Amino acid sequence: MAKKVRQPTRAEDVEINRGIASDPENPEWTNIDFARARPAKEVLPAGLYQASVKRYRGQRGPQKKPVKKPVTLRLDPDILAGYKAAGPGWQSRMNEALRRALINLRDVSRSPSSNRGKMADDKQLFVGKRKQGDCAVRKGNSKRPSAVEPTQAKAIRRAKELNPNKPALVERVRKTKHHLASRSSEM
Image (cartoon, rainbow, N blue to C red; front, side):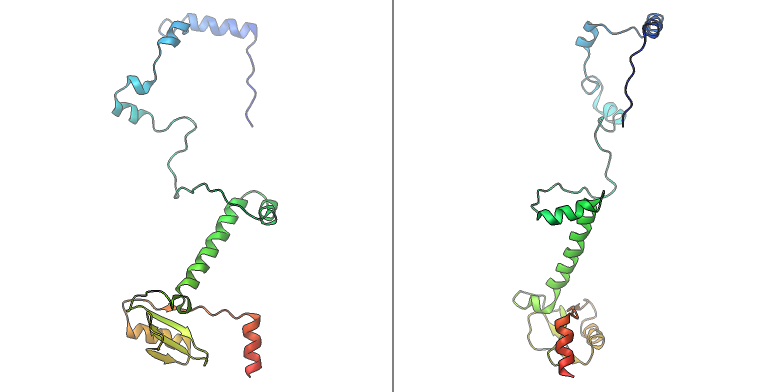
C-alpha cells in the first residue's frame, strides 16, 4: 500500500523555496518553461535515446518465460468458484490443470486406435493391446500387425528392432473399474 504524501508545513515550504532560489543553475520552472518543454524522444538522437531509456514507466521488463495470452473463457460457475476458493494463484493452478489435460489429450491422439482413420507416416510404428491379451506392433495405417508379442515391453523392443530411427507410439491402457471387472470375470 502506498504511503500518503504529506504536504510540507509553511516553514518547510519557505526552506525549500530558499534552496531553489540559491541554485542559479537549476531555477524553478515557470509556466513558459513547461510550455516550451519537449519529450526526450523528440530531442535526443534515436541511438542515445534507446540507450538511455530501456522501458517506459509502468511498462513491464523483458519476460523470463514466454508471454501468456489473455483470453475470454466461459466456465461453469462451480468450477470458477472452486478454483477461486483455493486462494491466490488460482489462474496458475487452472493453467497447470489445462496443461495436464493437453498432455493427456496428446497421449490419446497418438494412440493407434485414434489414428486409424488418419494418414500416418508409413515408417511410424504403433504398439497396442489386442483383444486376445497380447500386444501388436503395426505400421501407420495398417490394420494387420507386423509383429505380435506376449507383453507390451517385448512389443516395444520389437518395434525398436523393426525401426530403430523412430520411437514407437505406445497405446495407453488405463485400468478402470470396468476394465478390472471384465478381467476378473474372464478368470
